[in-house]
Image 1 (cartoon, one colour):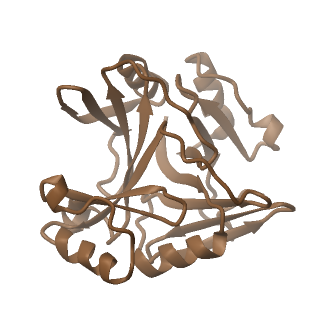
Image 2 (cartoon, helix red, strand yellow; image 1 turned 180 degrees about the vertical axis):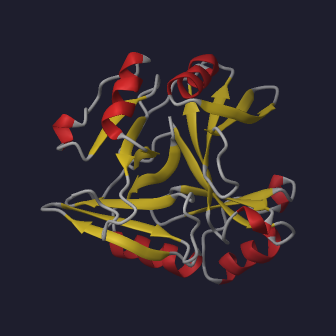
Length: 265
């Protein structure tokens, strides 16, 4: 299964405020927009995004001005060149971004800020050849059973475990598509050993996997016992959704590289 991570979707309470924040501080540009009857979807990303780089999808639903950021959703991580973490963090501080977790408090290895809705954004250091400045590096979700979570991604989507970090009380596992480009986004699975459970919250949307053949890959997922949440037929054969073992929604979408729009509508 060709399962490049296409985008990560977050819900926002004020679309204009969120767009201004991402365009000003992360230098993102609007790639495409869809206006529904009571919702708006905007795709964002760096100007020079790699063909396998992931987009950020911001969704605003009319009448939802008070979103709950649950703890099942962790963060998105964005890239800066190695050795430039402090410089870029200070730039964000000078621009008025909330001082959440500075590089010093994170051992000089990474830092965190928050967007207007409280979504956490990690800043990580990467080789400049591994993606544009501020490009999406990974999305972190919390899981209640590490073995089931790893099994879900490795068996159903044929992802590889590319790294792990184990501490006394928790572990992080990173998975990505087999033979993924260096610029591609990964998924970080965080497992806490204390047996806690998590709340999704309505500010967390979904991950999206780009596939070669929506119908064929959907049937393959069902054969591998992935949940039949929203099948292609119910979505006019434009996209589909399954869920992982913790209820995180995962969209499947088939892209037409010749299409005028990023949206299949």
